[in-house]
Image (cartoon, rainbow, N blue to C red; front, side, top):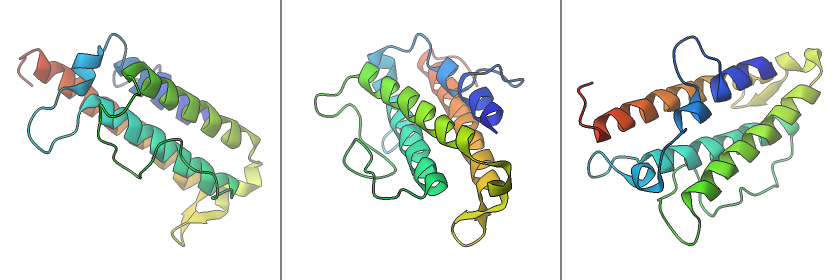
Length: 152
């Protein structure tokens, strides 16, 4: 199951760049850019993805008391406070590695165990967080293209 996570996060992915590889070369200014009022930036997508890796890790490990390193849930306004773009990209990579370690230690028989929302199995949840990475990788690619003024 770690292969699903790693392909979606760092590739290689058959469809194009994976989440982390989509961030290659993105500057803090590009990361903070918004396509319009009320729309998310690349930077916000990165912290959102890190947050959900944290949540999935908690569900799989059963350790729900551990807090996410940032205040809030789901969406985090960026830039904000004293955290830099590079701090938040590092947070994403660290949360990915922590999630991967939990998944790697799961015995195969635990893949059918319910881990959230009454019917979500461990395997379903792992596939879901991999798909989440790919979804946001696509959004990041689109945002980069929009910033360059290229047609979509």
